[in-house]
Image 1 (cartoon, helix red, strand yellow):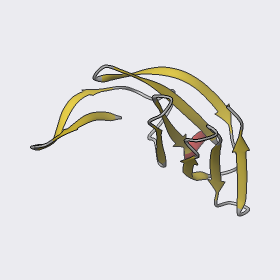
Image 2 (image 1 turned 135 degrees about the horizontal axis):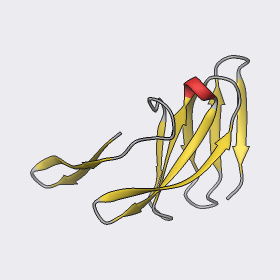
Image 3 (image 1 turned 90 degrees about the horizontal axis):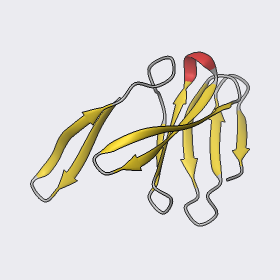
Image 4 (image 1 turned 180 degrees about the horizontal axis):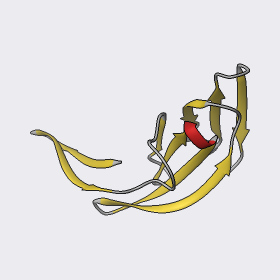
Length: 95
């Protein structure tokens, strides 16, 4: 996964980090808590990273619904929603 910082003159690559297993698909950012969430569709997992300066630090991994293609976060509550396309399921992960 490539890490960018967006400035007035546009985005700039500042680093990269590997996920646990495979290419991430969906991505969501919780700016309030400094977290980035990515779905790992090939393994039915959600992985989180803590934002640290110009980089990301691996945080947690959760099992998900089958084929998790999208993720969203409610920044007020911290709840994370994972959408699986295999059986049209929606998973709620509490903070």
